[in-house]
Image 1 (cartoon, rainbow, N blue to C red):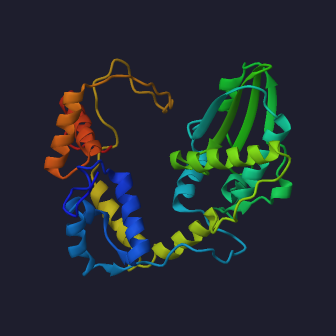
Image 2 (cartoon, rainbow, N blue to C red):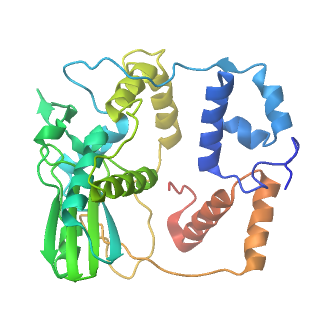
Amino acid sequence: EQVSIDDNFFALGGHSLLVTRLVSRIRTELGVELPLRALFETGTVAGLVERLGGAETARTGLRRAWRPEVVPLSFAQQRLWFLNRFEDAGSTYNIPIGLRLSGAVDVVALGSALRDVVGRHESLRTVFPEIEGVPCQQVVPPAEVGELLAVVAGSEGLAEAAARAFDVTVDLPVRAWLFEEGPAESVLLVVLHHIAADGWSMLPLARDLGTAYAARTAGRAPEWPELAVQYADYSLWQRELLGDEADSGSLISAQLDFWRSTLAGAPELLELPTDRPRPLEASHRGEVVAFHWDADLNAALAALARECGATVFMVVQAAVAALLSRLGAGADIPL
């Protein structure tokens, strides 16, 4: 009910994603840069106050940018573009979202709502062609986006639709199907490519789609404020912030030096005793194994994390590394 300036952030349930959000909020509100490490080393409001005096001034904030003729990819997009073009990853980077709908669906309104959302978010209507061997972002105008919703009788083909691969150089990174199983039962399947979305994208996607569908069923367009920035603005900001790899004094050069040093000598693969040979090419087939632990073990893990100044995730990851090592993978376990 009451949090004091001496209560520990992690003891109250904080974790690494919330640390990132907290550092971002401190940057916005106080205009200073605090490293993530500061949260782990102090973890209290009182401790952070002592760090503020020596903190650097906040970096330039994200803002709407002038768009050059060729917009570069962000580094996250660049990774996924490379994997899409040069690895046969198939549907590995598809993000399928399946929603079972009960009751009658206004198909026309749903199709219009999907177009509204894609019109609102440039990242959902961006393709990534090559220009002179270099990938770039090309935002498709809303008027040129075709029909997004396919209506299918029955639910056969749902898995195939979810697994259909994208070619990010020409395909929009979003597709949608409505599988009608009966007069009042259907499944809406929306598939996104990871180059345009991640887990945190689901909340704004669901929120905007719901808002747009409610408006369209009422016979009007959704009323929402214009977005302050789009993803292309972020890509340009990121490139400006990190600088040029050829500049030894740039932020990206420092980060690359760190990772080259950290990963130097890392094993190419973990030599684990398996019941079948490792395939020559990754199949990308995975599996989910369910298990549970009781409340006492959960409390003990949380207590160990607090004692070590770590998150529960860090403790569990260390346990996984220890297990792999005990199974014969050596002492250097890159996860």
